[in-house]
Image (cartoon, rainbow, N blue to C red; front, side):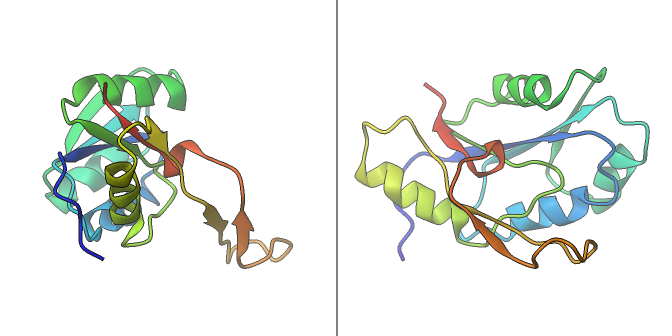
Length: 150
């Protein structure tokens, strides 16, 4: 699938005590077939090594710090820090499949009147035997969202 020739996108990742998962989340952003222009992680008052893990990865990521105010506040702050025409959001304990953004860009390119698009999600948990390994979700989630900045 060819990536449409449209304006770039930025990513916002709200993170609270995400030292164990932020690396994998960032790597899933970097693995996208359509590369992000900017990545902003908003450290929402973490008391663990979240910031140190990000720094050690030596990536082109902007880290903003704030007192703990919740993921909504952190996401809003990250969106305000971006100037890209499109914004995608990812929670610090989630992952994107490599072509997730490409598919959303194609949809937005084909439907210029669409303000935002969400994707389906799949839960995978190897650490909890009472949860299925993979289930499809038919709803929406902040972690699958891509919106137009305007």
